[in-house]
Length: 191
Length: 206
Image (cartoon, rainbow over all chains, first blue to last red; front, side, top):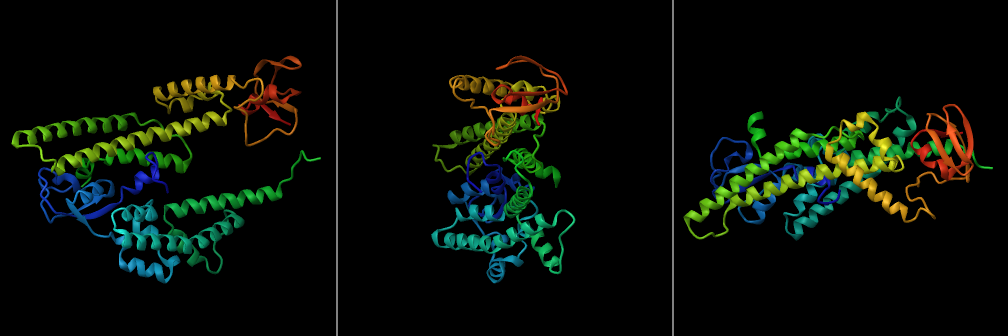
């Protein structure tokens, strides 16, 4: 995912919410989290989308906590076996787990940011093989196929794919299908 | 809950961008969402008023310190909405340009599609016309050597092509003189003369 100004994916990644704790009072802004308070009081906790949270955190008006999709429990699970974690369940359907992580990195200092970067890359690398592998199988089996003896685990993994992975899955599937077609077709104009 | 949610700044603009994403996923150009675009712009005006009154309130009190979190928030929302609006339109224009090139730069054929036409805003039609004019202008510079609008995905194998007429397309000037292409007929013609007709679906290679 790129950070281009016009990137639809980037814009949607910034829409993930993050828990912020305000350090100052801000009058007349209570509606920010859809609540009913009139003002924002110092020490109050509010769920804010990242795009709005950035400026508050940079300006030192608020603090943030690492959101649940990246807490230590998830980290441990990913380190143990990246393929068994359902990323889609962490960020909701249509969520960008990797994109979200990348955005969070901007808020962190060097060391934790590097750690986060390592987590993201390592998880991605460990899961990618399985993504592509399954996509190839799916393409080979055709629409009626799928399953097999380890079908349940495979299905669970597919359900746990987050948006970026899902896109890669579809691309790999399409590519495998086209390669197959290309092998089976003949160049009729060849002499 | 739903009403409180819709009051939140930036939500409507996000809906707009989600529409773009849906459009990519389903590979279709959705109808131009005029009312939503207008609503977001109205929100921008509303924010401008809020900013102005916030500045006025500051000025009344004392010297402006710059320490105004509310102002900062409003400004962030304004910039966010702007980004969403621009991204929505840029995404649509990208799709339109793709469609334009898929037809080999045949604008009339693209605009003749009423189903597509009904999904465009008037400005988008204007854009296509002007884009087409620019392309044609540029293309003219090379017309003797190269057709820059020719397909690059299927390079030609032969100078001539045997084609079958799928739809009547009237009289066309070719190297062999004028030919009246009638549905069902077959011709052996120089590819360069009729390339654009194949792309637009009037002729089919046999």
